[in-house]
Amino acid sequence: MEERNLKRPDFICRDRITGDEITVEITQIINHPARMKAKAHRTRIWYEIAKLVEGKLPGAYQLILPIRLDTRGTTSKRLAQEILKRSTDMSIGDTFKLGLGLELSKRDNEGSFLTYVEEEEDENEDDPVQLMTDDQVVCAIETPLQEAQEKFTAYAKGLRILLLDSHEIPFDQLDAANALNLISMDQYPSIDRIYLLNTPRYGNVLTFWKVR
Image (cartoon, rainbow, N blue to C red; front, side, top):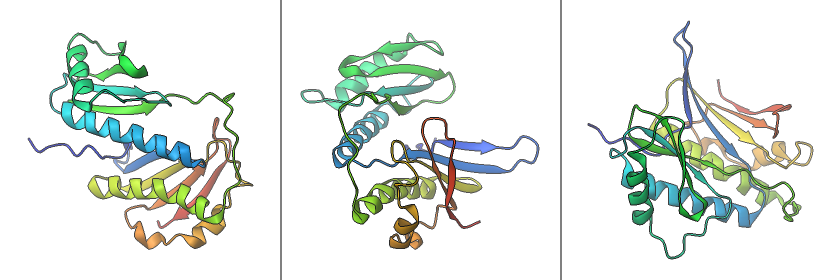
């Protein structure tokens, strides 16, 4: 069996009537450098674990990553072994608390892979939103663009759509139009459309980029 490419988009959606398909990736714009570093760490840990357990899990599982993931003194191999051990006794819908604030849940009996979600941030946390320079805005937007480009290139069907959640950054403060002028979209040929969303209810949706 051909090895599954772990870096795949979040969703492949198919219209049951027309048969049309779209590929969707959902991610956040992170405005704080420290948060960007923490997110990169969480993603790397998940990727290392997912690679070790792929093809060995009795179904599809999801790993919930805490906002503050301190893995000092623990190896990815050890975490992967614990996941493999616990997964054998789990049914669909079961959730098991691992160490380090990690939680493992079983999503399906089909397949043999591990996805992840991130724990919700505490809105009362004392972490003020800082003013951003043009370069920081571009960096905050380009990071998810690069990730989506890599995933869409590896695997996609139909229209390829990236949903960017602006999170705590209001649209009127996020100078997306200016950022678009500073970003060379030719670098991301695998992305057909980009939409900016507003957390938490996605009351506002802004078309950021559209090829077709």
